[in-house]
Image (cartoon, rainbow, N blue to C red; front, side, top):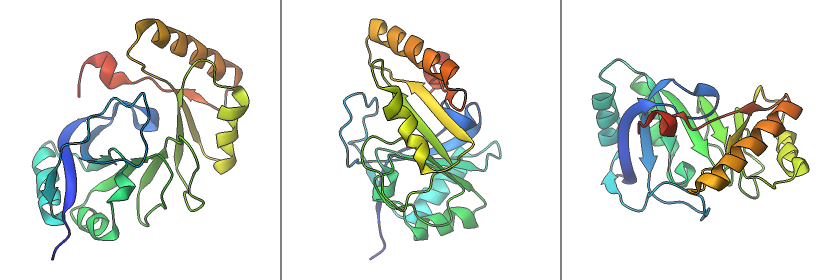
Length: 198
């Protein structure tokens, strides 16, 4: 029987975070996660079962402007993403970006991996970009420790959106100060929230 993936949604928008901020992408959001982060702002519990061919067709439908980048996210996409789906999407001409918490092994043949670590990182994970969700009060040593995953070009600090305007203001201030004193890092704001797009 052909594998069915639990797909939460597929939509076309701009990447709102990290190195590729502002870049048009089709987003493939999988349902389910192996963590329960209290600040998670995504309801990924609902899903529609889809096979790989259906996913590729839906992505192609959303990419009407000729967009060839797909951001695979969740939840935690590496709970489901496999070589079969990667090969079909590559065969359709798409460049594949993945956003992961880093707890699971990295599949082969991905074009870009953004890791937002929130615990123990799988030893086989080799991200292209590291993005820390930053809350005021986190120690400099804790954040800077993530640089041990290699000499990457892109290290991003993203102020945590707690849903509380006072805490958010403090997180932005604290994250800005951290980046100013640690120039190897870049400040990443959630521009999709600022612009009011999905």
